[in-house]
Length: 239
Length: 398
Image 1 (cartoon, each protein chain N blue to C red):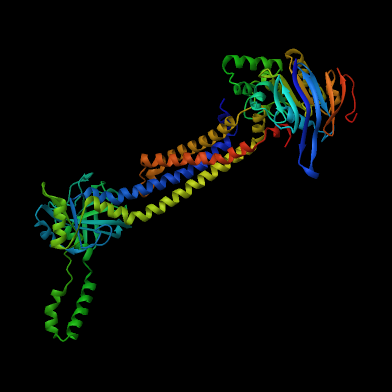
Image 2: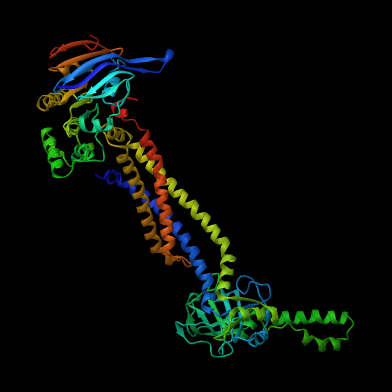
């Protein structure tokens, strides 16, 4: 089942001689349960693509279809993008970006609260996620008291709270050591398989993408080579 | 989920420090309110407690409290003869500063007809009213004297026979009640040397004007200054008398000015107390403004510190109203807590002030409403920052 389709997506910043083509004719299809890695050097357009897919940044050309709904077709189609982000997209950041004044439990509860899920059912979901991420014993701690790896696991739990169709992970292992980084990646893979959630990960670290379904390489705004399906070899970022 | 409470819990140290700082500012604002009300209360209490139907004073004067009024004592007989007047009593009021128990004290003297006249103290907390024509006094408790104390005033010594606490002078100082004759003597009597000097100056003027020394000597007693002067006549009207008619009659036929008690209170409030009211009002506005600026800055700093969290909230789909509510609640919580702290402080220390601090509920409610509006205003900067924050910031973009 198709989770996300980008067709001829373009994004231009500035105009005239200051024009920068950040995304140029990007097309891809991601199905439910797909694990996708986006790689590329700095300035290649990874973040721009992620912002467009997050429905934060408006493209300048092309089409975005998300979960069967056309969101963008040479302009926003009027769909409530904030509602879509709230209900159908989960985010994992480079640093965990947990809300510092909420406890671990409340951080995971927050997205549920936003969609109106409260009470015992919401509490059960939080407990289930924290147990799944192996941070249940830290439920009443503030994020500042957790290690980097624990914080990132809580961030993944938060991203999963509303059973999203798509998880966007922006270099989720960058602030972790290799062991903890791999563990987070394994969790993302497990989530993709078990929940049929599509996962798009931006990463610089080729060691983290073993077992990914698709690895795309961005250069100068062009998704110019689909390196592999079921990718399982290490490669350099300028490949 | 109440984000504001959770954020403030994390920053409780700074939250408490802000409450104490801003709360003390509110204490000063409430003190200003109380000081003004206290002044009006004290400034008018004597008039209200004396409470005659009419005050008769020197023509075109707003006396005896708002400005000086002076008239011969015997005029109260003329006033008493006006149709509709049941009783007319002479009245003296003037502030002095004298040594009382070895300490220089300011107080005001009231002289009245102690044998049934109007203008005396209505209720005594201790002792009895003045019953002799001379050398007895009733004092306000604030003067710090006790029953039986003997207090030298002018050329004589007075015995404290009663104490009162019902009213103070219009400037907030204690009152001392004397018989009319004692008050007049204390007010106008000069010492012997001054009297001798005055006589000598007058004798020389008369002789220089062509009189013989014997003729001048005979004239001198007639030129002695008259001490039988009063400041006002207090009038009690007959039960069926029309105050306006009686007042017009006194004005037209006796050439005095006449005020009801309410008019006399208005004169004081509009005259002596009006400028102070404006002064305190301006000061209150300034302090409220400072309080709002402080809360704005604190809220703005709080907001800026969690700007990344706000970006995350917006990225994961939190509507603006969720974040705005958090900022607004923090601002209002800070304002309300500070105000309550200020209110608690002023209620604890109001009695320590030398002048009366009268805290009235309507004033407090009005100040609270203004503070609340200020609290909402204070959150504007923070809310503006929230609206400006791009969710992309959470992803490291823009």
